[in-house]
Length: 423
Ligand SMILES: *Cc1c(COP(=O)(O)O)cnc(C)c1O
Image 1 (cartoon, protein in one colour):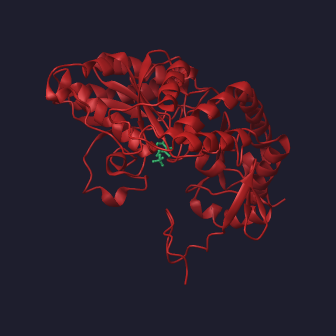
Image 2 (cartoon, protein in one colour):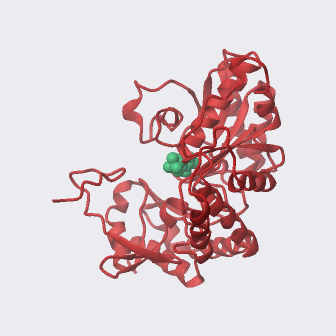
Image 3 (cartoon, helix red, strand yellow):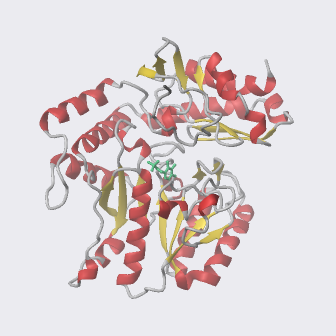
């Protein structure tokens, strides 16, 4: 009998049997057959230290000996408290309050609910919709599905079930855009806000890098402009840094490229180094302080069972220590340069008729094809060359672990190029 495991995003009739992973070390995981694959995706972008990192494994073991779990309702513990302090320290100034949950989607649900209740509490019950961007991906729960790109996104099937929010065009100006290019994107954002701000609680975005919706990159000026527009129109700004957080765009957080502090920021994926599922929704004093009051409406009625799980918090603390002590931001800068040289500077790749665009930001590189058809079979092609690649639609990308060596990156970019250039 085939396995009862139901795989994500899989077409059940045509899916290939999933290879079984039995272990991993560094940038590689090992299959049952003994085959070692270099993971170019670091497991949906979360395993930033690679597999089997001794310090992270030891942290989990140690914590397991002390306390695996306890509810955060009415109780606290050192790992939750210490991690919250660390997150306040490392995130943009002004984000001083941390609400835990167990996944990126739930972290975003918390952010949206917090924004809605904030508007209610300050006397704006009519501000009950979100403003999202085309090409956005914010998760798979119902609330999150409603703020994903409603046309090209993967949840179009559910349009009739979902609440209707507002959408602005995806930013089109690249990372190094001129002010004029960014002004065009900001004008489009202003148009939607000018028409609908009276019913919008918050603008939410994946800052600088719209990840699962097509690895669309934009300029830090767009973030600064969005911050100013939100202030002008009385709308909160939510940064979904689930994918961009912890170095993926080249700085610790995408917000750091623009020196912008959002009102609410969501972290997950890299938070625990990928070793356990967890998320944190951070809020500014302004948002938090609106919840200080006497009425029953002032309590934030949310509390995932596993919020603040001690194992997750402890491994997140260790992940941050390793990140800082081993100067990961320097490693990421070197990875980024290598990715640019290998992909952006390859004229044959850039000129290939199937290739629409090649771009790199931090430790993220993507070859955008004109159609998903052009990438059919690339997973198998890469596997035969020792690399695990899993494109999203027409985007062939890599988000390697930060511990990847020069040789690892060369192997990944060689395979990505070879797919198109057959060399
Ligand atoms: C992955 C992702 C999510 C959802 O996180 P899960 O842990 O899969 O629920 C939300 N937002 C962004 C930007 C993501 O990349």
